[in-house]
Length: 438
Image 1 (cartoon, rainbow, N blue to C red):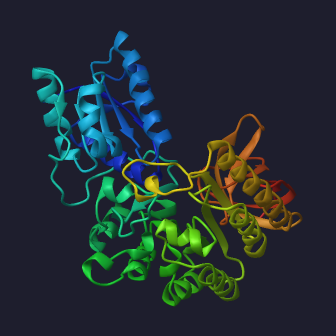
Image 2 (cartoon, rainbow, N blue to C red):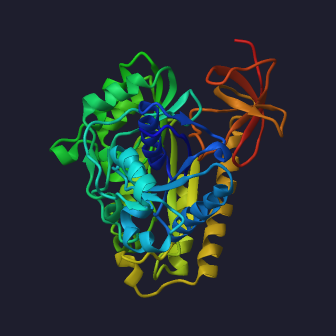
């Protein structure tokens, strides 16, 4: 049996992070040491992303950078995740710096493939893994924030997206296994539910069980709060809204990726919703849950998007006034239907539109954030910001790593604990204040 020191570089989304944590769990199960000092690793795993061209380039660059450590103690490089899952045919002969290739469900093959590699050389083990029960994880996030991936794959076939061709059809993980996994994660201030589409949970087995899962997770004593990400708008049902309204453990926050506001572009994208549906949904959410924070994402410069449609999206932002937004320039990905669409927009113009959307959202976000000045908010401490010489934390309307922070001064603060913070000033993304006594 191998007795090596392992390190990992994990790229991409939080769903990919969970996959990486399962690989670390397998390493722990085998009794091997895990280090966060890459220079000490004898086996270095690069967990890759392949969603966009830029992500693939970043993944390959990470492998090339990892190869520099061979001048030290590094013996083997393992490349896993989305990149080999989709592109192993091109990757294996070209990326000779890597010794072992694994796909997205090949955790069980890590050690057998490594043993073969030590004996015989490079190994392509993509697709050899055994699908089955959810495996043990080594959590790589702050101890009070944990992600729970409730499904893999995707039902949707958005014309710009490679995910179904990388991760396959939507597959919900068994409810009892997810509850057991969440219980095993220990004390958790914030459990973040993720999937390509969390709101479709259970539909592949014949019945939507998303709210049922939320209720069972809420019954766990070790889980204080639950945050919902990647909720598709057409599946934000009345049942889910009632649960958000009445369940004290559910943070009043929804991440609802829209990608566009205009019907013609939405149809070209293969999205199921329409503008009036979106507006009706947001009106209902804010009527039922006035304090709710809504986050979304948009793609700018989709093929044939006109200047008028771009301006309409700016107006849509003004009308809805989202708490948080992300904007991305359309990336033309081979092997997607949108790649072949006419009216591809130059990169400079796409970037101009992204910047215009961000400028608009900054004014909206600043206005919304300024409402908190003078108020006292309950903030979870995430740690110390040494550059600002203060603590950093988040309110319920700020998801980890993707939204802003609350920077605050206090005599002392403990990571994972909640504090009352008097807000003294705001900018478009962050709040600033000081702790008050309970």
